[in-house]
Image (cartoon, rainbow, N blue to C red; front, side, top):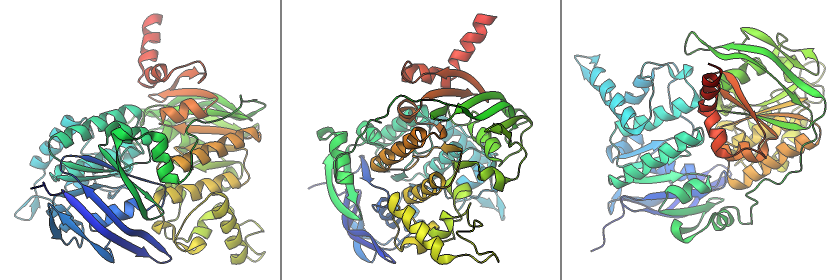
Length: 514
C-alpha cells in the first residue's frame, strides 16, 4: 500500500474580485520532501499557500492531510494540524519584542501571568541549533528586515510544525544566510518534516528542492523532478518564453558628479554606537554604484540618511553641488527617487488604490491637482494605467485595486514604475528585485541600465551577490558602518567580494598596518 501524501490540495479554485487567483490547481506534497512552488509575480503561489494555512477559503476543491480530508478555517486549525507558515510579508507586531512575537497565540500562563522563562530557553536553543541568532528582547520595529525574517522562521519552529511553508524566505537574506537556510531546510526534511518552498530564485530551487510545481497566471503548468530539469527549462515553464539570465550591458561612461557624500555619520537605533561612520564617496551621471554588504552593517541607516528618513549626526549630502542635508523631504524628493527596502513601511500606502500610490510624490503637481487643490482623478487614473502597462503591473481591478490586496511582486513593480518615471537626478534602488520572478528581474535590471545609459546616476543597495556582480559598474563594500573596499566587478570575484563583506579584508589591512 502506498504511503499517503503529507498534504494534497486537489482542484483548488480561489477567486477575488476581477481575478481567478487559483484556477483548479492540484498540488501534492510527499512526506520528508522539499517541494518548490515556482511562478511569476501574481501567479497565485502565495494565495494557494494562504488557502492551505487557513488565511483564505477556496470556493472549490479539497485539502487532505495524510490521506484524510481536513477543513482549515483559520490559521489556528492549520497549526493544530501541524502546518506552519513563514510569510513573505511578515506577520509581526512592531511594538512587541522578538520573544513576544514568537510565542504570540501559544503563550504559557500561570494564574493569569505570562511564563516566559521556558519559552526564552526554547527560543535560544532553536536560535543556536539553526543559526538564527536573534536578540529575544529587541523590539521588532528596531531590528533589520533580515532579523524580522529570522523571527518569522523561529515562530514556526517554536510550534513544532511538521508541514512547513516558506514563502520567499530568502528574499531579505544575505548569501551566507541563504546557504545556512538551505542547510536548515535539508536537515528539517531529513528529520521527516515536509517543506513547501515558494521561491523565484532558480538557483535556490536547483540547490535544495526535490520536486518543483510551476504556476502561471493562476493555472497549474506541471510538476518536475529537479534533478531532471534545468534553470532554462523552469524559466520557460514559469514565464512562457525564453528569459535572458545574464545581464547584457555596455561599459559605463561616467560623467559629472551627481551625488557627493561627505563624512556622513548616522546614529543607530539598536545601540549607542553609530550605524554609519564617516562615509564619503561620489556617484556620477552614467554609472551604477552598488553598496554591497551583509545585512545589518549600516546600509539601511545610510539610505535613511540620504533620503531624509533619519537625520545625520554629522556630514553632508550634495546633489548637483546643492547641499540637501537639511532641506525638506518634498524638495529632496524632487531631486532623487527612492525604491525603499521595505515596500510596506516606506513604499506604499497599503489602503490607497493603486492609482493614488502611483502619484504619492507628485500629486501636488499641476497635472494632477487643480489650482484650488482638487485632485484630477481622470489624469491620475490615466497616468497610473500608462505605468501599469509599461511595467506589467498586474492587479485584479486595475488602477482601482487597493495596494494591500496585490501580490508582493506587483507591489514592488508599482513602486519601481513610480520612482523611475518621476523626474530625478539620482535613483536610489534598495533591494529592487526583492521578491521578483526571473522575468521581472530581467526587466528591472534592463531599466536600471537604461537609467544609467540615459545619463542618470544610480545608487544600488543589494544583498544579492549575483545582482551586485552583474549590474554594478563600481562596488563599495560596507562593513560595520564603514566603506572597507572599492571593487571593479569586472576584475573581482564573488569570493573576494564575500571576504570584504565579512570584514576579513579590513581586518587583514589593520593587521598589516600594526
